Length: 363
Image 1 (cartoon, rainbow, N blue to C red):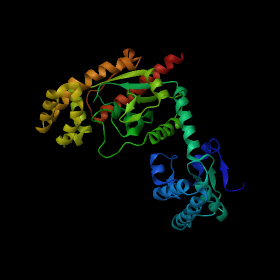
Image 2: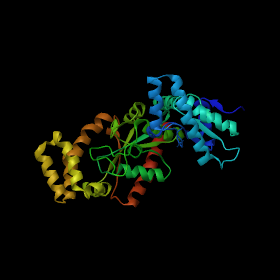
Image 3: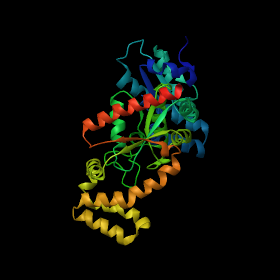
Image 4: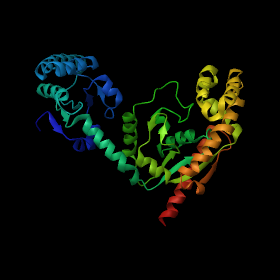
């Protein structure tokens, strides 16, 4: 084969794991928004250089911009080779791509091929990959025969149950984990920013494409948005028509679970009070001031219970039956406590129940 080999994504996808490196030569900001799974960022133009070349293109001429671009790209490729590639053997097989599969990736792929490496360039670049992801997310969810949605009010342990199911080998989509957000006004995670929408969708596609359509998929009931990120329509439609499991946990245990999961708010009343203020339109200034006083006084368990009973539970009851058409027929799953053993037992029981339902449906 002649190198660089310029191939469409449809040809590359089945052997994506065979490449020794997937090199994204776009700028760091482009890479941060989204990239191919497993890619590393070795920009041939950084963000500042890309702006310089683009400005010259618009204000002067394409010729002058290309001269500057070639100078910068050549320097950066030389640096990447010197700092990262010199130790690679001749059979090292990289995949290179940029935004549209044009000048940036073409320059690196050409040089690597001239050295003697069997390099492949993604025809159409990231844009072609993105078109594939969009098309797949519109059709993939429909391929799954059985999706089971974990329902239950805030603090009932749905996310923990998903994590245990995942450890036990079940097929799990954890939208909150992928979105780095717990899906409510208090859902932001202290240790992580939410990814870009495109990166969220890429991570979701990467999970779905490796699932067996004949096996059940477990997912938590979510609204159309998790934080600021939107769940793809096809998956949302599939979830809302799916069989449901009603995860049940006593209020006292829910309070305990939430105080564990939201420890960053328990330890920082001022931060919690800022978020509580966002509920003023729903509950009025007097109620919010009361909740903020409880937080400031360190009466967190009392506050959490009031938030559950007066805010989260009513909101849940209003939305769940309206949005999940099979919730009225949901299978109850009771958790006696929030111990690891309880979740492990519940996960095994749920898998058994779902297996029985699938067998009965197929009969």
